[in-house]
Image (cartoon, rainbow, N blue to C red):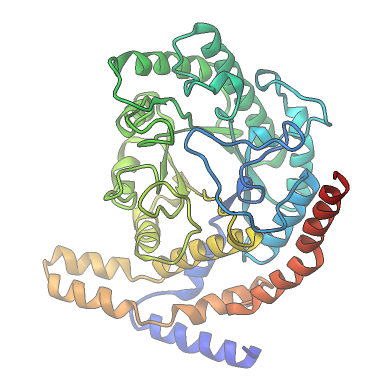
Length: 433
């Protein structure tokens, strides 16, 4: 769209929203203050860099597809992330798993990792004006092969994973200290049974003890925020998970930790948008892993569907955005991986913008007056307001292509960068025979 047409569309949109009492400029200022934490594992199908050529999967984690151009090294992954961030308006964050350490080609056991193994990532984030979040990696490891980690019956295995968790908290704290923004350190474990257990209580009792030991060291929240994440089931843990929704809700409230709500980690008929207002009443904060489950926790790329918009509305309506951390969590290997990042992040931002352009105060007044007819009519009419004109203007202001134009950049990147990776891989494989 030509600049003059874009500005005219924006001016008309601001006038229309003003009729409903909405200050568009204020909405854009708030949107600019909300960072999205982009998950590193979309770029390489949850592979990581612990060992060359390793494929980290299991515990309910599985990337499907074989689209060419997957990142194979830290440098390639960073390059892909830089391209993605360049096409997403605003300043955002990187969400990094412990398995993405820079070990210099020498294997480092997970209970021995240190901040120095992530200094390259910290320096890269600083150079790109990014915040960072962190995750211990409790899957794809010999000591997790039987499906248990922090809730394991063997004290030695439990201790190994406790030490891993402690190491990750220290790494996260150093990330937060150096970048000047607290890192959210999110704990998720795959522990569970494939079939019906005889004892549901004991693993959860062990998990409480392990978590308490993991979190025992006090760390300044200026540098690190602890979060815990539940899951309904995983591959190989269909009948029971120690870290269920009820378990972690109780743990987060009793220990005053952030609770992580993942859009795919509940029953297929549940949605996380309905849980946000309740969790914020009792927990000090909330971490969202925004995903798109299709019949199960399939981690499809986020689209601008009804649930995403409902999540965004609840975040904005809460008035507690300073206690909420928004991250994405999906991994699709069937499409261009860089495009997947961009589609999801831009859709999350679009949903937040639509929510910020809502005349919430007016809707609440109507609701308190029990004028439910007007509430319904207004909510429906708001769907037709020109929020897309505001979005295009915001993208232009941030120097990012609006509309479909960003896809041209991705096609060029695919031809210039990703295709060459596939070609070089084919050459290596041909030479092996």
